[in-house]
Image 1 (cartoon, rainbow, N blue to C red):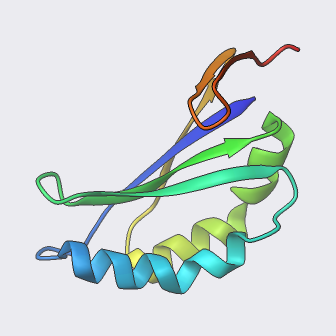
Image 2: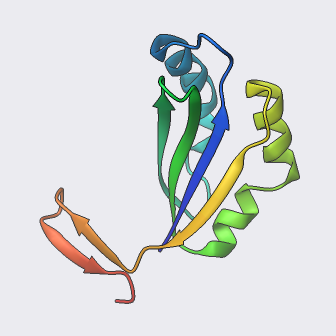
Length: 105
């Protein structure tokens, strides 16, 4: 399992309501995307940043999404270059399923 953390600066004065409206406008493009398990949009009013926490089945799926076209979309929508960090997720606590999952299984 791969997690990707994406962050980018937002325009000065962006509110939670503003960010929510923008995020809702982009959310449909991530539906049924190959290899993407879940995406959580992120908003930090104090730091003036937005982004997403993505859960992928594997690194190849993550890298396929974060291509030049996607980066251009982020620059156009938010006026900034996104920063992407990848993380292995070897153990998952899944409270919805009531399980602790070893990602290698």
